[in-house]
Length: 366
Image (tube, rainbow, N blue to C red; front, side):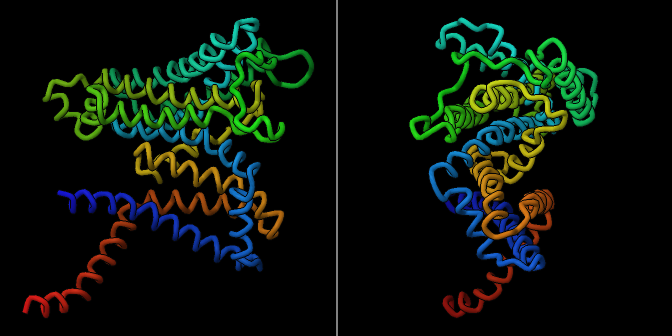
């Protein structure tokens, strides 16, 4: 039993690790092609991500929303849903938190802070509810719905921040949220540049909550059963449409939480950049690399956060364009998505090792 469990764990880890190694190797080739030193480049990348407290702080800042959007995608995957709409749900979470954050100015922190966070989560959940209902009761594919919802969220945010939610002045931004709605910064005593905040603690707590829900509650069991085989789940008495809706609500709440934390811990206002933030889309890569497991998602988000945080330092110290890191991230996604190919490589290596060791075993038996 123990051997079987070890085999499953090693099988789960093999593909992401192989994908990461292949992507980093490709990065070395690209850096050499650019005429730069790959060791110096990756050294600068590590320094940029973990070289000092401020760099670690920025890595945590980049990691926080990715943990939550990765969990959002992973939870939906467990129910057989591909929630491409995490980006739109992230935007709605930002809008909801920004609005409550400045509209309820005057509330004490003990009320204002949780209300702002919960409102951001509710906004993301309600945005995911629409494609969830359409999928569950009309059979409309969630990929198409959620992509459309992303565009609606983008243009809705643009309208609101240039209209009803616009702060005084000419910039497309909302008013700043009340100090009572802001998450405390973990290293505030070191200076204003240390932006890591309590959001990372909330994100890790959310990962633990998702793990508990999926593997230790009835709702989680039903969600996973529907994801494995909807027909068998229905035959077993599980309400499939209801669980599809529940999964989308939970998924949207996690992405909305990511948006709310981004406002409450970093920006303090909604800034209309009229393009995607990327956190929702990157969450897909984080979930895939993490094997859709909460622990894997946290580790994967740390990797992506470190790559994002260290890329600028790599450009400054080693003269390597930081876009190479974007290529490395894309290659990781490509290889993880090509899971069958990686599994073939892993199995081939296993067969080679087995064939090499078999004569010794035979001799041992003899």
